[in-house]
Length: 231
Ligand code: GAR
Image 1 (cartoon, rainbow, N blue to C red):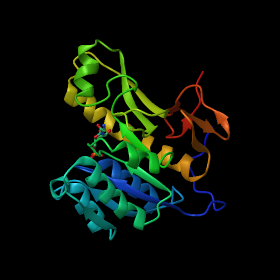
Image 2: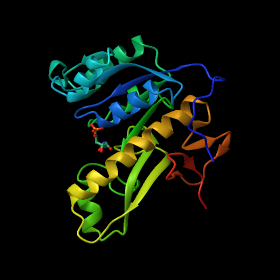
Image 3: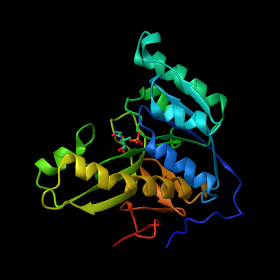
Image 4: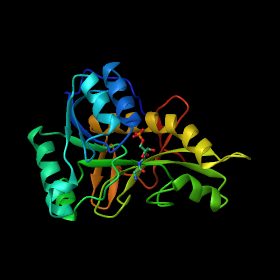
């Protein structure tokens, strides 16, 4: 079992979060940090939307809240360079995309290889992109979930190392699925960041290692909010 408790053996791990909207995953990560459950320090919330509620969560917590709008730049590459230059000033060990709804320029992703993760509301590689809950319903899936992966230039691509699963129930709608999945996402993201911060999970080429050993399947979130290799 992979323990989610804070260990004094690890130095603080510096994190920057990117979010485009509501920010509940950011708030969950911040809460875990504030409760001393994660050996991390979130230095800033960066957004591509001036009106993102996630920025208000950061301000209320006394964390730098920085918005950069794509409208001020000629193309995506220029915007991404500017946004990630802001992040680079903070010298983060990890950048967490928590509801950040833009693709990132390939050169920028390459410069941060192994240092950007994303949470996505589907069991990747199923349903990259939008409307994931409705697409799972339309496909007649019995199980739905969320994934955390290292980011590549491919939309919601890159090696997946952690997932949370839940059954799809009779009568479920996209809204009920989203509502039931969100608290699982929060625990999944915190547990995932915890493993990276403790040096246990790392990107390894096109794959991921846990304690130096290649993962052949994503870790699964357990009822006790830990991540465990299954099967
Ligand atoms: C979350 O469900 C997250 O998985 C999803 O956006 C939502 C953000 O919610 N991300 C993606 O779809 C990325 N492709 P939040 O702002 O409350 O954290």
